[in-house]
Length: 327
Image (tube, rainbow, N blue to C red; front, side, top):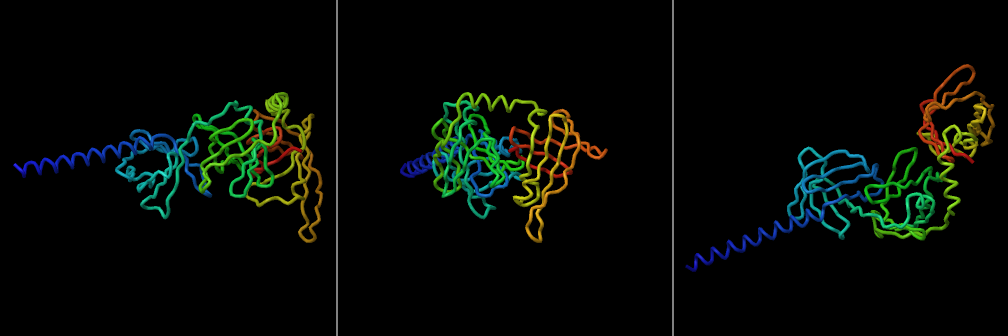
């Protein structure tokens, strides 16, 4: 009789332990559900993952890459064989920060949960407000859509579901994205930094009036034929280091009468003098808003318009990508 009671007691304890383990596993799986962004320095792409009930979805920002199966057991996650190497231990640094130590990795990596951005502004109002955010002594000047010539970088407002992002672009390539926790006319709170502080508050430093906004929007809505009129100065050539101040004087001018002028400048390497070259004249024609048919000296070429705003023009010319700005 005593032996039966002992066996029953042991079985009861084992059952409770199994229930507890199953409960913990279910709880962890529940906590993982949702979208997470990789928080890492010098990442070559913006990695977003999404945990559903039984699948792990991998994105490059908002572009779907692959969907795989996964299992959670205690503090371990296992993904289907032959997929992304995320097998390993995980822990929650806080409710919204997941730290994963892959079996095949040299160090742990953090993912940050994406949350709906709290704001009382619409996208147009956000884009027309400027902010300064300081993180570890470095100040980020947030002016949406404006080219920062010092680093040849543009910040854009992007969105995944209900989460807004500061997206950093160079030559139309996204370098990184920072989720926004809260944004209004006075401040912006961004999060997802790889090191503490994980969340930083920045302040707006200037605003635009409603008339300014309307004027800006109406100008951006101009047809390409009108946007392109003016002098466009060189700022970046893909594959080359920063341009000299002399080279940045080089411009392409598109005139109302469809005349085209290219004015080159180059630095004399022996004495550093800035040499003004001979102007190259021709004509141009906009084709389908994304191409420019250029004729010079009876020779015709086609330039591709990658993007154009009232201040920034990115072209593909002679198999080179050029970034130009209008003064």
